[in-house]
View 1: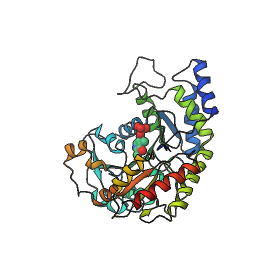
View 2: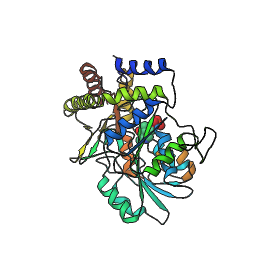
View 3: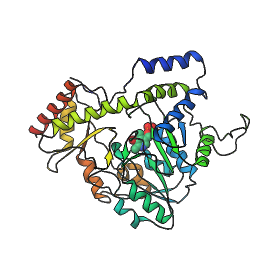
View 4: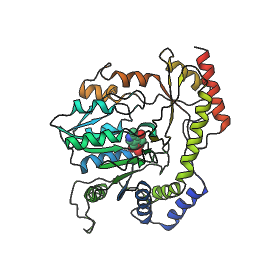
Amino acid sequence: MKVHLSSPDITSKEIEMVLKVINGRTLSMGPMVTRFEEMLADYLGVKNAVAVNSGTSGLHLAVRALGIGKNDEVITTPFSFIASSNCLIYEQALPVFVDIDPLTLNLDVNLIEEKITARTKAILPVHVFGHPANMDRVLKIAQRYGLAIIEDACEALGARYQDKMAGSEGDVSVFAFYPNKQITTGEGGIIATNDGQVASLCRSMRNQGRGHAGTWLEHQVLGYNYRMSELSAALGVAQMERIDEILEKRRMVATAYNTRLSYVNGVKLPYVAPDVQMSWFVYVVRFDADIDRNRIMHDMQSHGVDCRPYFQPIHLQPLYRDLFGYREGDLPICEYEAKQTLALPFFSNLSINQIDYVVETLQKAIKSL
Ligand SMILES: *Cc1c(COP(=O)(O)O)cnc(C)c1O
């Protein structure tokens, strides 16, 4: 049996929406992007949503819109997808990594304050795997020191921290819609903010720095082409109409894994804090210290089960070693957890048969160690 790591949940509804756009011939800068933005703003309960062509573009614009630039420091996590700190490097700002909480795998909020300097401008928490960071503490620290908050919510659409939507509390938040995310637009992202000025700056920057009312060839600020196409937005609208259904299906797959894996020795299930409602992005287990994750992974892969180490620590990526001189041992909790984690196949239409096969393959791999 072959089981893929992820797969988008596309129905005839999505296909019809995209076809309608193609038939209508307005492929960019039309009503579908606006509709998608309105749906997201509504869903998140924020005043503004600005669609862009990727989560990475969204993070870049968020950093620029907050005026974060050369040598400004931003406190963030090393346990993430690389875009969450590359967006700082684009602007010559400096990511300052704090180690992670070994339970939630999010940045350890107890370590933030000791990293604050006169050059610190913002905190950039990542809601890793769809589990929101401790936003209570992040907000309090940001308030006390006058720092901005950029939420990388690219993995957390629909997650809740206490009663609040992930991505609804920071100054700016970013979501992503690559095909492995909860919902997809092919490629795409959304910038969410209650700050009208930040939103309007992001709208201008995604569109070559054009003003609202200006002419096509008048460019007021340094801009980019980070626009989302109408085709992507159409796909996104159809996905958002099904968001509750999709998230519920993902939750049920996670529950099915939890039930089966709770009997497997050496495997730790994903942790969910009591005040958190997880939005399942990936299903990541952790192995006990005496289990060689890489051997398990290769064994499972050789039996057709697609699985991957999520994540490699950002500070140990070749680029970051080169730029900042990071070495192994600098962020020990992150490094340890990263060695023990394994993302199993996970998507909304994963069948019970496939789940059983993945769990069986995993059990056999552990036994054969
Ligand atoms: C997916 C993701 C992004 C953005 O990815 P894009 O591929 O650019 O849409 C950013 N940060 C994290 C943590 C992500 O998982």
